[in-house]
Image (cartoon, rainbow, N blue to C red; front, side, top):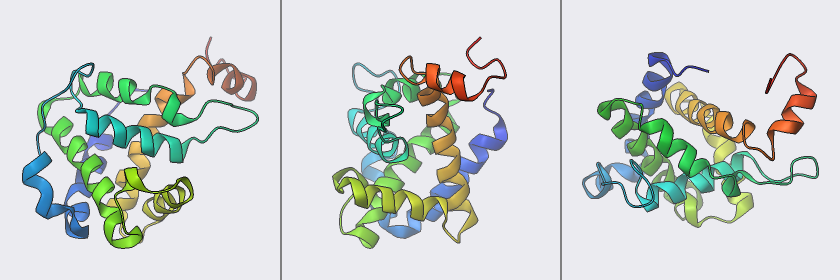
Length: 169
């Protein structure tokens, strides 16, 4: 799937929303953090946010035993951001921090420090939020992460069985 400008705009639109949820005051600290090894675009903190979101979105099941947090989606997202212009990439990174900090008011802690069930609850809250910008941004982020998760070597064979339209061929 090709990432279009519409996907990036939807993700970028949520930055203003998330800023009002309580993360705006911290923007100076993490607005444009430099990449940290082994990442080329993400900081280690941003990578941990990606892993936490991926774990809540794609938990291990009896059918697919690898959880999103263990599927290397932080590296997938980092590689994806290498091909995104600097402005939208920075907005995506800002979105990550905004979502992480946005749960302080609703759940009492940052997303990365919540228990698994609280992360799932927060994730559902984002994807079903009344505010279209937050709902669309979170769903778009999950779509991007889902692209990486579905092509993971431990996930792809199952996806191929369910989608016999040439998936993985």
